[in-house]
Image (tube, rainbow, N blue to C red; front, side, top):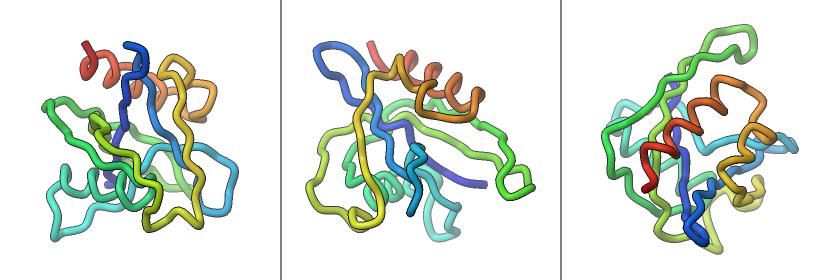
Length: 130
């Protein structure tokens, strides 16, 4: 199982999400990584947001979604938590190998390849924002 976040920022009362590029690729994705036994799933999600995107935030609600997709010929389950972004850092561990962008949440389907992932992002944004 992989663990990740949907990093949400409200700009002008509209929800936006933060995406990062895959290492060495121009493909946009959400901060995510493999579950580590020393961390809870929520701790892992927050750690990935910090390491991959330079984001500090909180997971305030108990909602999450599981999305299944194929990666290198195998089925992977990705658990995503909505994260309220509190700070965007100028320096973060993977800044040299990833780019970061903030997009209107309504445009997520234009950046994310997987339809189930786009639908999941839309759902988490709707339950996590007023």
